[in-house]
Amino acid sequence: MVVGLTERLDSFVREHSDRQLAAIPLTLLLIALLILAFTFATSGAPVKLGIQFEGGTMISVASDESVLSFEEIYADYPLTDVRQAGGRIIMHFGPMGDEMQQELVSSVIDRYTGVEINQIGPVYGASLQKQAIAAVIISFIGMAILVFLIFKTFVPSFVVVLSAMSDILIAAAFMNVVGIELSLGTVAALLMIIGYSVDSDILLNTRVLKRRGTVHENISNALRTGVTMTTTTLSALIVMYLAATYAYVLVPTLSQMTLLSNIAIVLIFGLIADMINTWMLNTSILRWHLTNKAGTRRRKA
Image (cartoon, rainbow, N blue to C red; front, side):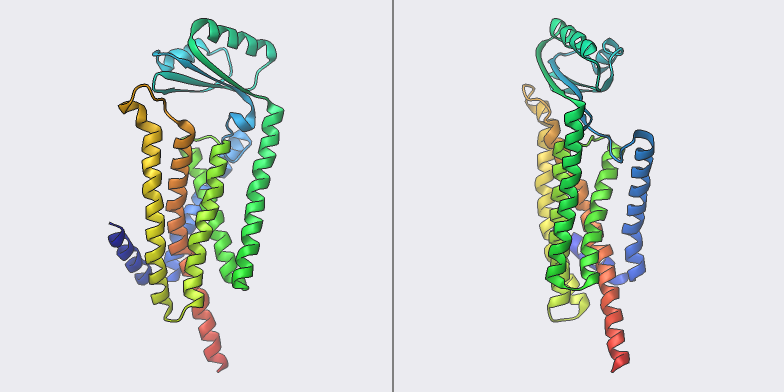
């Protein structure tokens, strides 16, 4: 399967021009930017913020009632999300006053068993937002410095940073489309995507720029190694996602592990985006750069 995917991707790269290759990932990036812009215009943030960043209350109870019944019972409260996980119902409420919050907690405790309550204040949530933004910015700055020190030229360094940024933006847009909120777990997933992106892009750049042989041969060799690495990771993440999301179907006593499920699906989509950006966008720019560089040398000679 991996061999077949590698051969098809290698053939696709060879048969298409640099402009044709770059058009696909750039179109995806444009769509992602439009989705993020729409979300920002409607909610005030490019990605829907979870309870850890926005503040609020998460309540989990043991119940066999339907999600719809919980939505009706707690319609008078700022209920933002209700989901069923195994034999439990998990409810997310937005920020509310102390009196309303005490009333909500008392109502839930009196009505249900196995109640778990987690409260995040809006001030603490705002602080976590700043820390998450700082972590992403520091990661990009560190990545840019490292890449420039390795290659010491602008174009290879630029494409690595562009590819990583595109991976993050596409993954964030995907979160908006499927309704995954930004939490500490999904921030960690986005940061891991940066690491995976840099790994595959440096592999490509090193093989193409620092090894002997034609550009096409070096790209093919890098592609075989890179696709094998990525598909191996994807296989593990798919297993992780299925186990975290559907384990309760086989073992009813288990509950859905929402955090692990969200981390896994964000990483899966981020790695798919990384394959597109690395082997189409990065490859096309590198190929164009080396072709122009060789042409300049011939003209000077």
